[in-house]
Image 1 (cartoon, helix red, strand yellow):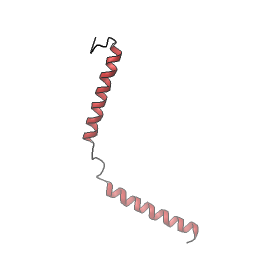
Image 2 (cartoon, helix red, strand yellow):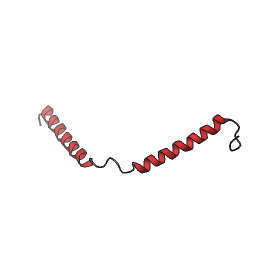
Image 3 (tube, one colour):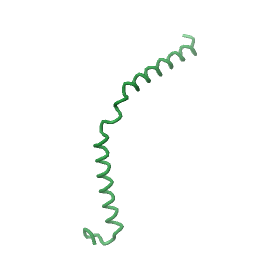
Image 4 (cartoon, helix red, strand yellow):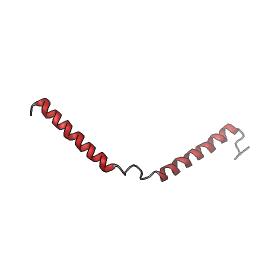
Length: 63
């Protein structure tokens, strides 16, 4: 009997919830600001995409 809970499946579920929550918090702290290294490239790609889309719309509508 662990923490007054006689069923091992119930207390193992509690322990797993605590372990998973701890893992998610640690993972979030480690990867907090990742992914911003190529942000400038993404912005430039979006600008090129929008310019191409605008050009295509002008060609379709004959503007």
